[in-house]
Length: 174
Image 1 (cartoon, rainbow, N blue to C red):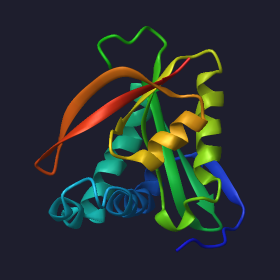
Image 2 (image 1 turned 30 degrees about the vertical axis):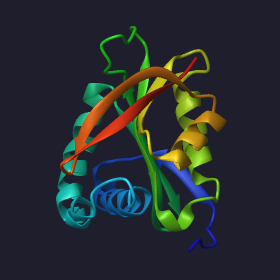
Image 3 (image 1 turned 90 degrees about the horizontal axis):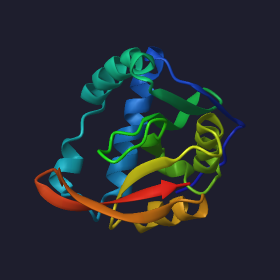
């Protein structure tokens, strides 16, 4: 079910955003990966434990060159995106990587992800090479990335998610 959104503001996240980001993160995983990731793993995701991870991550992020932006509609967090140095072995100096981009499922299709992506691209610079990893079976996300100038570059890897070996595909822009 989608809902009407108040005006959405995008700003840099801080440690006080950890709990609502964790809630969005867990809800998004449970919805987006329902037919991809093992159901038992998705059911085990704990927003409180994830909030602790987010608190640490948001405190440490600036030291590591990682920035997380949050999308807020009214007083409600509806999405986020994290950008940092590219971590792949073949990354060049200055390459950037989108570590995560997730939305509250009720806000899918309202342009929030588009605004988060525009923010990241503007921050990285139009000429910067940006990579990201996406589950091969996540067609919705893959379509979204293609619409924003990303293309699969032929690099793939398997990732253990909840006991399942899932294929991830790397996408690159520029």
